[in-house]
Length: 417
Image 1 (cartoon, rainbow, N blue to C red):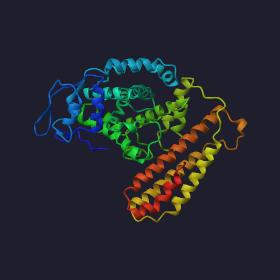
Image 2: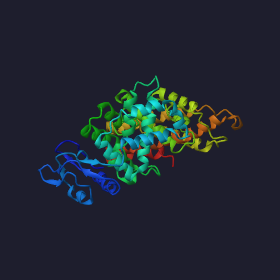
Image 3: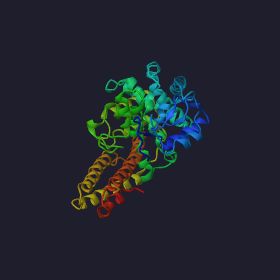
Image 4: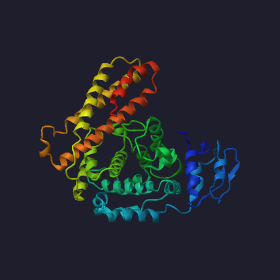
């Protein structure tokens, strides 16, 4: 979790980015577009020289006159033509996401041609293509979905800017250690600390080295925030999050579900409304309409996760009792804020659990939609408990040891494992 500055005269190459860069240079042509010079004026690498492990050694603990990202250019790899090809291939797929975007395909392809690919963005995307190929496909899908959602009349976001933000939203992942980007299992607290820097890193990178609009850079820094303050990295809430930032958060949630759900748009429609005040209400309707227009099929005879949902309820009840009992026990405003956060968030999750509204219906009377939503509810509420536990533990790191020990039953109780 290295601190990075992209200011002139203060920049130091990030080791994780340089590692990825050297790896990418084995596949693609990445060369210096200008002399790479340290703050004392010593030339480290000449213009036109290709990136290699030797450059990596010379960059160690050196402050650069110009950010490294601005001194290099990818001569191949991710190009506008390549991105356009990926966009076309995605829109031709027969999955529900692509089918939902088909009516917007002509406009999306037209607007794509108006999106500039800055050399720094091209460099970062090419590095991602070499080290994590799926991340570039994800970026293109996010670009298309952001554009399609922004076309809704109820969305106050410019379509071209939405597409630009979708394409670049995860560009800061180049500064995260690769083992935390695999997505094979939930991250532990240390892994999350590494991962939570990527929105802000992407924002700072683009603000410091490109001429992309400020509104896009800001939104990239916000794409994991939530209206109720439960997101990261800054725990922003309400109007502190830009409309484009909220749209990118919705896109990220929807594409995340596309990896695990047989009906991602229906799942997204549920995920975006299950907990009150997490997302603007309009986006659940947009996802629902997209699912309907794509004729997204639901799995038949889905098993109802009754035991899992009952366990979640028991966890919520225990967490509420524990946090209530610890009110007034904190010796600092920070500790009191943790208790208050836990109580507010648990109350919202209980409201979500209670609103499922199918408990008085016999199992044989449940529709496929009911069963599918109960499965969604189990997964979503379990995820929110995990996120709340992680948030409390992160906030508690700023407390003294005694107060942290006093409050630890809160996050111990929240665990659903």
